[in-house]
Image 1 (tube, rainbow, N blue to C red):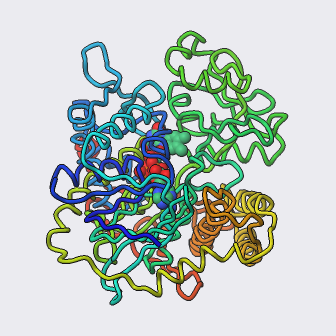
Image 2 (cartoon, rainbow, N blue to C red):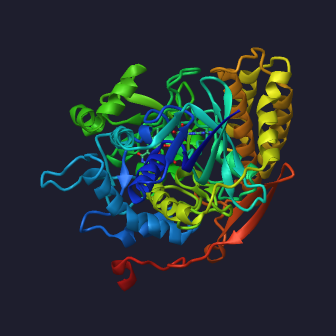
Length: 573
Ligand SMILES: Cc1cc2nc3c(=O)[nH]c(=O)nc-3n(C[C@H](O)[C@H](O)[C@H](O)COP(=O)(O)OP(=O)(O)OC[C@H]3O[C@@H](n4cnc5c(N)ncnc54)[C@H](O)[C@@H]3O)c2cc1C
């Protein structure tokens, strides 16, 4: 096993990871900062895939209070209000920093101000963007900055275990696998940031990048940390339905299409969203449920989805506004500007994640979490545009906080050797068994989660999902890898992906069973009411002796109570 040392180790190179590295280095240039990433820096993760844009209250007619209230109401009063407040108050300075320090350039209005577009569930058009492929602009510029500064990189290094000190009091480092050679590398660090970006890839249709398999949440659970809001799993309503087995199936078609006035039509050509107050511009949870309802009642298209139609807005205008989306649809034979495109709800984002303070701290000293791995900002439903804001805002905060924390942390902590050995034995386990059908296992997981722990849930389905996950877990332990090589053995990594996905799925199902009401993305057909908003609670999941335990914890309304508002005009009324 190889060893290396760094003051600050950052896991993941999405918006959270890159901002953290840049902030830490800027605050304390003398510290060693290292990014370890499962993929390639600048090429992996979901921030690069961000299409629609970034929510920020910049327009004088908008306000931070309005952005905050949209976030709290969108999240059905479940967000941690201090985290949400930190998000909305820091986003304006982060956007200016992205442009003025790192060189991003967002689209402009004729007067030179940054253009904000309409996104669902928001009372102001505050989603700033670079065309309809915003994430490429952000990640390219951030990656250039990281390359230009003295920040070490361990690319294609997969983190597999958070390793505490011998006394268990603080983090000592992280065990990784160098995917290129298959060698284990222990990276000793004084501070570690978990920024591996969640990623609900355990569902039949999903949007996140293939390198994401909930490794961060699985590592956090194994390290004894608690996750909150795990049942809150966002489906994006308009995933491309390219056809059975096609790689682009599930890829998201951005929310701005509905924001701009796109129609959703069922198989009979009817607009089925008209009963909703905001029609197609309702929040993602509402639209996903409506589409799912059409599908399961046989009112879908021939391939089983529904259609999105933009042609009434004028094909030239659609081509100008949504160049990236038009090209993506054309890749699979659809004419987005002038025709109909088949879409299906697709698993998109995990609102749940590790419980953190507003400074990204966790219960384990020296371990910080930011981005989609952290829970609490979004409650039951993330607004489109609040995801990349969340990862860049809290990534930057984590970088500052770690840089301030390290000088007081003393010497490097010695790692607990038993934890390292147990993690290695777990990773080596599949090499001891005969080959098996990993693809079949993955397909059963994807179908089971889609059917029983997806958009519409009830106790019977969730119990089925729980039993399925137990069975698949046992089968995975029996499933070996026929080819024993370690260097770039993607079957091995598939095996570990499944292990992480199964653990994260168990957390989702346990929390979904515990929440006997319907809020945001979590809809229980056997408990369709939202429950008493004043007595809102969140779920807290922990792993103990390989059993998931769930507690419910009261939400603290630290800034505003249900029925109240921070928006001056609403308060006056
Ligand atoms: C198609 C798509 C479109 C989206 N559009 C928008 C949008 O318009 N607006 C918006 O606000 N949000 C959008 N989102 C959500 C947004 O991308 C995420 O909220 C956000 O970018 C997550 O940032 P992150 O830094 O937490 O994770 P990511 O950007 O996903 O980065 C995670 C990093 O961790 C690495 N990693 C994973 N596992 C390991 C491991 N075991 N060891 C080491 N490294 C690991 C990955 O390789 C990657 O580098 C979109 C998401 C998708 C999938």
